[in-house]
Amino acid sequence: LAGPFPKGFVEVVRNAGDIAHLLSDYVVLRPSGRRLRGLCPFHQEKTPSFYVDPQSQLFYCFGCQTGGDIFKFVMLYEKVDFREAAEMVARRFGVRLPETPGVAAEPRGRLLEMNRVAEEFFRARLQHSDPGSAPRAYLTRRGLGAAIASRLGLGYAPEGWEVLRSHLLARGFKPEEIVKGGLAVPRASGAGQYDRFRERLMFPIRDAGGRTVAFGGRALGEAEPKYLNSPETPVYVKGHHLYGLDLAREAIRREGFAIVVEGYMDVASLLGAGFDNVVASLGTAFTLAQVRLLARFTDRVTLSYDGDVAGAAATTRSVGLLLGAAFQVRVVDLPGGFDPDEFIRQEGAPAFAALLGGAPEYLEYLIRRELRGREIGRTEEQLKVVEAVLPHLAKLPSAIERAGWAGRLADALGLEDALILQELRVAARSGASRIRQPVQVEPARPLRAAEARLLSLVLTTEDARREVALALEDELVGTRIEPVVSAILDLERAGHPVDAPAVLDALEGEGERELVTQVLFRDEPVEGPGVRECLQALRLRRLARQSREEAAGIARLQTVGLERHSVEIDDRLLRVQELARRRDALS
Ligand SMILES: [Zn+2]
Image (cartoon, rainbow, N blue to C red; front, side, top):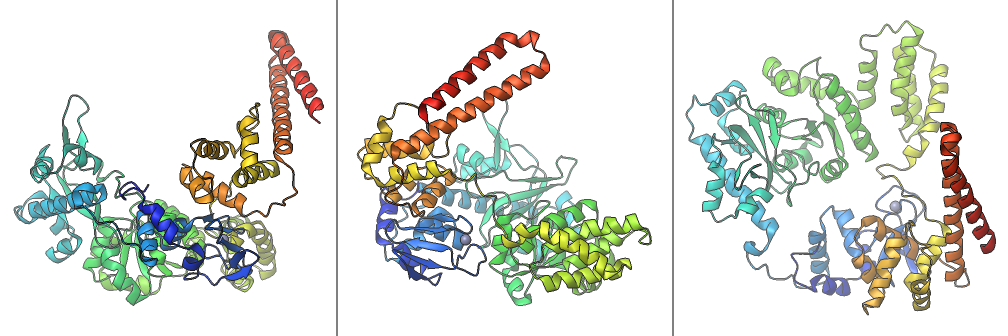
């Protein structure tokens, strides 16, 4: 992760930084025993379950199970990558950043520079093409003037197989860099590479800071697919950017909301029509990363997806995430079949402005959409509408709001309020878990007491590590703590100190690091069970699991037919007996 940093830099920053100090910039913390406690910044809560431990230099929330070290906190809170987080901590505690030895040594910088050169190349090709040429004709046909093309940095990838590649090679980029940056593709047979984008209108995809991180190309000939995007590269992760955000961010702050559309052309045409606060999700639905990115600029969104079935489905999926992140969501209800670009070209900007101004709140939109084309006099049709809308109503955190919308739904259907409210109470109950935990990932499999206790002992005492290393049986195989324990034993064998930061650094997976954090924040009694008791509990559990598996295997074989499998069934019965014997011996 820390690859580009000089060796040791991260360690220096870690030692200079203090987690309690830094987190106090973000969270109001009060002493609680040997730790500090406050309201979790990663989920909504009224009683504090967010803890900071100055001794291990870790934080952990018992509410949402988020935890980690100082860098992890900054990554999550500031929505930056590890490198940026390390630099922010360094600046905060006065550690001098390493000198950047020129872009050449830094792969991310090289790729960004290559994208800049490629963008310039595409742009020049567009500017110098004939007014009647395919890209210019396309722009004219779509009503996009030179001013918009220039703001978006539009360009043209010409015909030919190695036009851009030759240009980049001449500018000093290496063949493997060009492939890594997604601008060329290795030939299937033989050596060599060819340009990924050929005969396409090019849209640079920029990050919020205006740096070009990828490209999208729209085919001008018959080529498939119609839209082709850069693959993921070290500077571009799909679903992490919003197209147009670099241009729209000021307008979003000024207008107080963002218009979210599906594609490049929608952004281009809304900009052309004078709507500056527009971004595209570049995909069929919002991702969590995009929601978090947008949350830096506003908490109000108006969705304007295509007015067809796919657009409606994308709207529904996006809304869930946005509402979960406490966004206020409205939806432009485009007449059937239109996308925003077509609508503006046919009906004009004022008509779109009117739709935008009158955009209903999401639930209102949903109710209208569900009522459309139904004979609401019929009971089964009414039921369908209720079933479609209620799960969304149930997610509203406020009971008053829920009741208000239930009344509105009842009105629309011509029903008695009481009936709808009764249904709603049931739906609200079933949706209750989702109300309490917005934007949370599924919790991991719970850690068994014996596993947690054992890991805690191994993390904190040398004796326990020796005992586990000497244990002969493979009690740990298949448990969640196995990779962590073996990493700790490796550290010890290599003569490294075993402390929380060292263990976290030695672990590969995010899940494993979370496990360590979680266990360190459990308050384990000093007089609890020892290593031997934990191992025994794990051994018993493994034997019980094996017995269950054997029994299930026997049951399966019996349903297929006793005669054909009698030998195998006998084998399995013997194994079940042996397992039972070993369990008895243990307990
Ligand atoms: Zn939390």
